[in-house]
Image 1 (cartoon, one colour):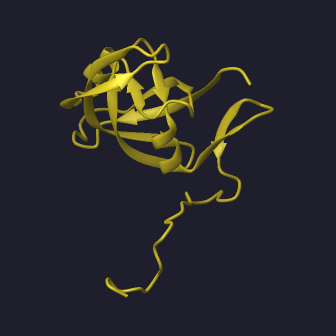
Image 2 (image 1 turned 90 degrees about the vertical axis):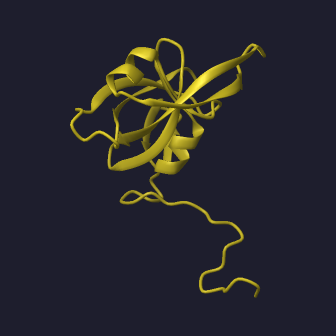
Amino acid sequence: MGLVYAEIELSNPSDAALSPIVQKALVDRGSTWLVVPQHVANQLRLQVLEEREITLADGAKRVIPYAGPVRVRFANRNAFAGALVMGEEVLLGAIPMEDMDLVIHPLSRTLMANPMNPNIPGSMAVGAVAGRKDGE
């Protein structure tokens, strides 16, 4: 399908005095997390929360800083996420994409709001039954 890029807005919801930044992000459903380079983490003044062991595409394992929180905006969607701090470009992975109910249009290779839920993000809560009390 080729590479897909999208402009996303990143901000630090813990520091309202900081202006949001707009970044061109590689969109990759095969990756799990939001990834930001160190210079973006610095601009947003993200706090390192912990370290995480990750597996790279070549199978190598690394221990990477996990920082946050980060507010991610795309179109009429928002997500709050943690971010792995590494690399040279922003990467938008599956978790924030699912949180915002975003899909990749295969022909145009563009990121877009799920056309099944154009106005607000939708999601599934499998196993949950509305109105059911614990123990029922």
